[in-house]
Image 1: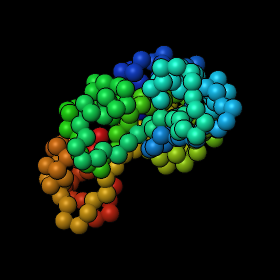
Image 2 (image 1 turned 180 degrees about the vertical axis):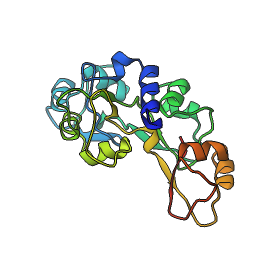
Image 3 (image 1 turned 90 degrees about the vertical axis):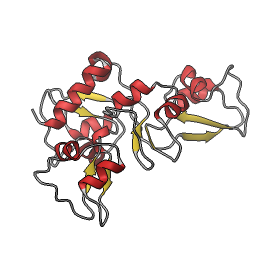
Length: 224
């Protein structure tokens, strides 16, 4: 089994197989790095908006911190939360967990983090990744259509170089922690990058399947 598949399976087990795999508990990914926000129109209600955008009233209230079902025309309303964010200066796992109504433990699990170190510019999942197990008859096209994504997104998130998938294979249907990378800049070395991002040269080499310490400008490297 390839490292990528082992990582997906391990994460699926951590999340709980019943909740992470298959479409029985599945919600469309609608992958986004920003919240999807609308302006409330005259006549809109939480009920009508929940039907229009395929979300529950309770979810709308939670996302918008509403204590009642009353909404006002002209105000903004979040209808889909971001699945991933870019870390800003001053962010910590604790502050991000609080902002996105989750826990530090979950953020670490979802992003395959071994410690609490994060860095400015890093991409992090703030919602649990959606994982499915390929069943007979599934294709990347059919899975992309069901999850409201594109084939190219699924290939990028799952490190696929072709459209071929196998029965029993685990696939991300939302951004995966393994798809987040940095671009090597002139002067970078594995040692300098390991110090900058709080990891080790050995870990970077293993994650990126490098046989030597040689890296080049423009190269993409995984950190998670």
